[in-house]
Length: 116
Image (cartoon, rainbow, N blue to C red; front, top):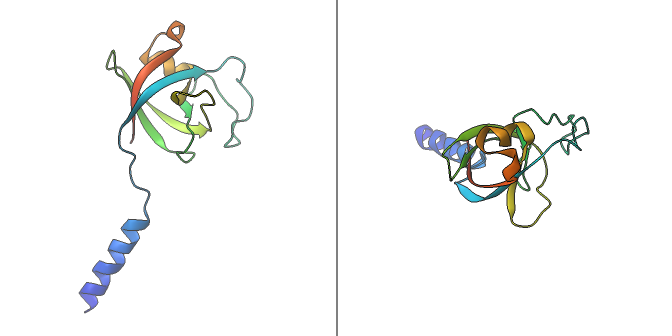
């Protein structure tokens, strides 16, 4: 009986853990120069060169792998802001993070994101 109770408690505890986000694909953009030094929604100061991003629903502190669908280049970032606030975009990367996977002049890249 104790074994069944322990297994039940473990299963209940695991159910409370956040589930990993399955890969989501869409458009990513970048932001930086005008926001550098301002406070993000998480309260920290935005650093346009840091490996961070804004997402509408992922919790602050989430680590996300972002893969450029065209080039295969990837970057791991941390969510520290909310957004993007432009329809049709799934994530807003810092300038530094976007530069790791695409040309800044491109402005928008087709990416897939997944929780690390």
